[in-house]
Length: 292
Image (tube, rainbow, N blue to C red; front, top):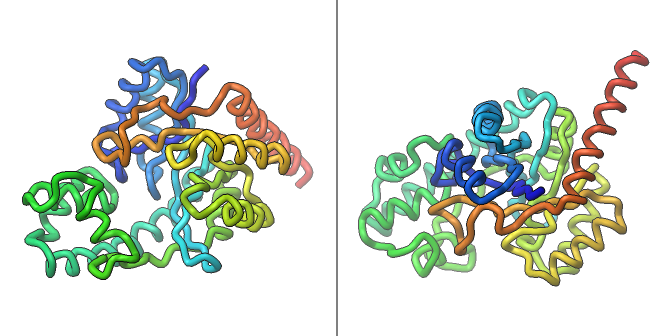
């Protein structure tokens, strides 16, 4: 069984709709996917319904933005199988609001450098619950000042080291608070794409800190990790009794590299461990409820 547990739709920073994502997964022979849109749970139920109609299993998910004070970096926590996703609505709304404030300032900064209006950026984000860098780049391509989503213009505008960057950091909740929110929703908390946050030593220390906050797993197979990285992450997960997941972070037209759904997957054994972990979590909750 093949399972891609990291996919985005146009509800956040992907270019394809839920129906299109699931149709692509089916054509690729992918048995299960997780639609993990950024900071929105709006597509969870729709994805399940469409998946069932098309014979593709859909695991509920969402990718939540967080901020780590120690490193000063924005990080992402994947929430899988939340039994009470409504409990994440407050966090998603908060993230949407602070991202909205940040992107409004970014629109103004961008307009000083290029002939792009906020209205055009919003049009490029039609259907999305917020503006993302992909939508900014889409607008820049529309007016003819960029010829790709990721290239010189992207690096100029969205690389912290660039003197011309327009970055404004949204005031997201801490990683620890986000992990707590995932658990309050009775979900499974997994650190997304760890290798995006530093070198192996830095990543190991990072995961160790988040384990103390209750982190349940790490994303081992992902475009940001090569084979050696993935093997090291897998061994770390096994040693520390963490779940290991994998996914392509598929965004359609907005992919950072040439890939498609299923290029990075969660192997059968690790998928079984995720589902077994969730089953144990459910039994524990039932036992606790019975004792009240």
